[in-house]
Length: 80
Image (cartoon, rainbow, N blue to C red; front, side, top):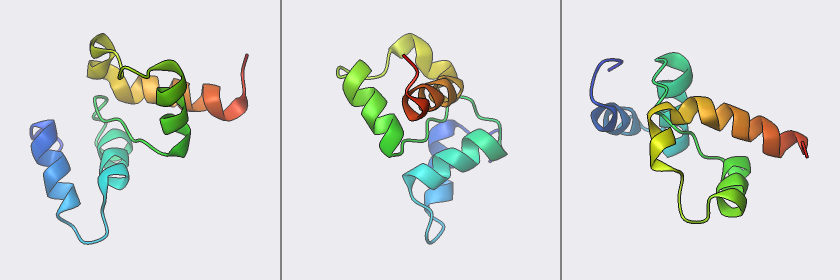
């Protein structure tokens, strides 16, 4: 699964009972080092709503998981 196309890997993980979109993305990002995976929780929803209302930038999607970590830290810790 670590080398499968990302959409196939997502689908395979979500086929496991109890695994939804966020958990699948977390497994891909943190367990399989798939940096294009982008877990979305309440904090990331806030970042997207506030800073990316028109969607996450296309240029950043290749490394979205890395960006997600910085965005999460930024919004969670209230850095100005």
